[in-house]
Length: 526
Image (cartoon, rainbow, N blue to C red; front, side, top):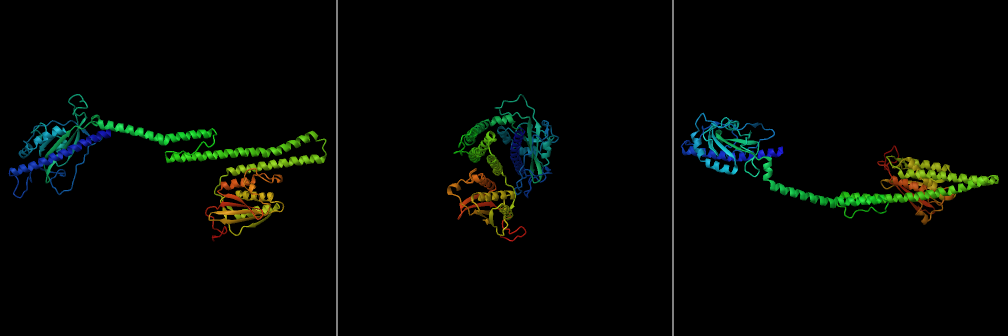
C-alpha cells in the first residue's frame, strides 16, 4: 500500500510539473510581448535585461533553444518527505504588484480558469516579489512570499513539497470527483529568461488515495481478477493433465508392484512431462529388476534346499543305521558309514563356503583398487602347480593393472583353474594367458585340453548349482561366483569350445591411467 500511495503522489507531481512548465512558458512569452508592445525593449532586440531578479539556480524553463534537454524529475516520497503544515493564507504585499506582470497575466487568466475545470489543479502566478498576478481562483493581488516553495522558486530553483490537507467535511463518496487523501502536493516553478527570474508558477492538487484509485480502476481490476482466476483454473487443469494424472497412474503401478503383481509397472504412454517420463521408466526398470531378483531368490532358495537335502538325507540314513545296528556291524561296515558321514559333512562345508563367496560376490562394491595382473596370475599358477595341476602360462612382458583388487582377481582365476581341474579329466593340461584387449581392458584366457563341454551344458554352466562333477566334489557355484564378481567390476566372461577342451575368456577394465606401461618403473609405452 505504501508503495502504491507513493506512486500516486509521484504521478500527481509529474502532472503538476507538466502543467507548470506550460504556464511558465506562456507567462514568460506574454511578459516579453507586453514589454515589446509597451516599448520597454531596446533597439538591439535586448529585452528585460534588468527585469526581475538574478537567478541563483537558473536551470528550469529557460528559453534558450540551444541548451540540451533538462527534464524536471519528480522527487516526492510519502514515506521520506517531511509533511509541512497547511499552506499559510495569502497576505497583503509590502509592494504593489508589478505593472508589467499584471498586464501579461491578464492574458493567461482565462486559460488558467478553463484548465482548472478539467485538471482540478489550483494555479497561481506571481511576479518576482511573490505577489499573485494570475490565479485559477481568487487571491489576486495578495502575497504568498512566506511559503517555502515560493521563496525557492523565486531564486530560480524548482521546488515541491507535501502539505497537510484539512478536509472541509466528512469523507466524500468514492464516486465523487473530490479526493480523500491526507496530503496535498505543491509545486513551484520559476519563470526564467536568460538568467533572470520573472516570477513563479505555483500549482497544487490533492493526489488520489489508494481506495479512490482502486475504485477508479475497478473495471480493470475486476477484469484482471477474472483473467487471473481463469489462468489459475487453466493452469490447474493443465497440471492435472500433465502431472497429477500421470503421478496417480505411477502410484497405482507402485501399489500393484508392492502387492507382488508381475509386469505391473510399464512406461506411461502419456507421461505429460519429461521428469514424469523419466520417473515412469525408472519405476518400470526397478519393477523388472525386483521381479528378476525375486525369481532369482526363489530359484536360489529351491536349489539350496535341494543341494542341502541330499547330503542331509544320506547323513540321516547313515546315523539311523549306525544307531540301530552299531553293535551288529563289523569294523569295516562301521568305517564305511563313518566315511560316508565325513564325505557328506565335507560337502556341506564346501557348499556353505561357496554360498558365502557367492553372497559376497553378489553385493561386492568396487573401489579404486588396481591389481597387477602378471603378479596375481603368477601366484595363482604357482599355488595350483603345488596342488598337482599341470598349468602353463603366457603372460608376456606387459604389466597390466586391472580395475579390481588383487584378492578379487585371485578368486576369479582360482575358480576357473579349479573348474578346469574338476571337469577336464585326469592329467588335464591348462594354459593361462593375458593380453591387452583394446585401449581400456585386459583379457585373461584360461583354456584346457580336457573333455570339453557340450553345447547344451554351455548354456547353463553359469547358473547356480549346475555342475557335471558333483561326484568329484563340485558345487556348481564357482562359475556363478566368477560371473558375479566380474559383473560388479564392469567385466564379462564367455565360454567357447577348444580343440579339444574348453576356453574361458575374461575381460576386465584396465585401471584408469595405467594402460600403456611396460613395468612399474618404466614409462616406455607398450
